[in-house]
Length: 190
Image (cartoon, rainbow, N blue to C red; front, side, top):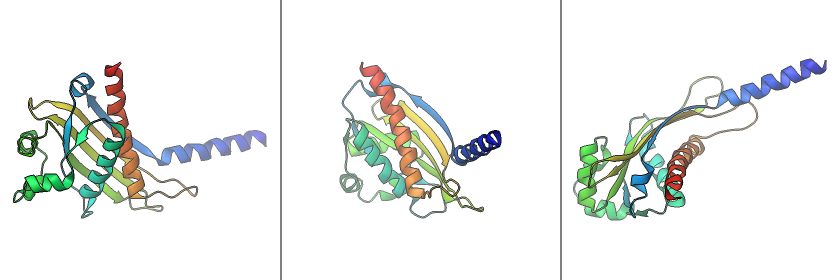
């Protein structure tokens, strides 16, 4: 009886951990990132999803995580919009390194963060788990070098024990991505 109870508990714990899965790829050039004080613009993330505001939502979450975890100086969204007035369409579709570099020069920053949101939805099924996929690049405007690149997809949710939202999952993914970059920066600052 005791053995059966242990098996049931282990099976239940296995289900809980199996419910949240993620895949992640990182590339960090920490020494180059921390070599200078960075003035950064977080460009609007390209929305590749069917959710109409996924790029804006995830971009705002990402900006908050970067503010909290780094010592970068950031260009505010309103200042960015003022400098690019009349070219706002360019900002909505930045997926190319050359375009990101050109916009960074126009903005007068030395670093830009750009990328896309590839998933932002609830997966259809019995429990409709949230799914978030984000792809990011940190670009040195002067050299055109990508200093940080990361992609992460994660499915949230769990059975009967908790509830999960798209926003909470996006916060978790952004926090995880930024933490990895900051961890690499700290190893090069020491």
